[in-house]
Length: 128
Image 1 (cartoon, helix red, strand yellow):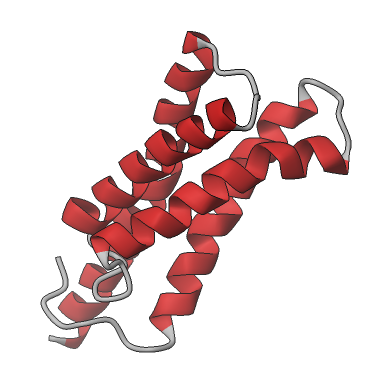
Image 2 (tube, one colour):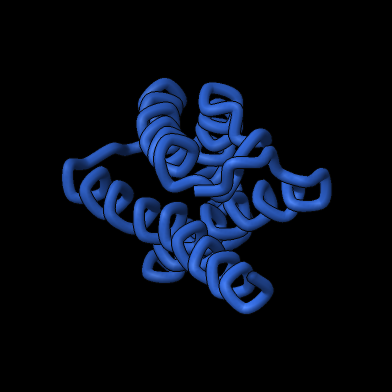
C-alpha cells in the first residue's frame, strides 16, 4: 500500500484504466447480445456514473492504486450505483446479471490495482 499520495500523472491513468475496464465489461456482455453502439452506451453510462461516484466517495485521486480502501470502495459503489441507475432508467436487472457484474468488475477493478502494486513493489525492491 503506497504511503505517499499519488503523483498527478498517475491519477488520469488510473481513472482511465477503471473507465476502460468498465467499458470492456460492457463490450464483452453486449457482444453476446449482438447489439450496436447504442446498446453499449446504454449499458455503459450507469456504470460509468457509478465509477465516478466511487472515485468521489473513496477520494481515489489520493491513492488510486490502493486495494483497500480505494479499490474496494470504487468497485462496490460502481456496482451498486450502476445497478440503481439501470433500474431507475428502466433497464433490466436480473440476479444473474448482478452476480456476473459483481464478479467481473471486482476482478477488473481490483485486479489491475493488484498487478500495479506488484510491479511497484518489484521496482522499489530493485532500487532499494
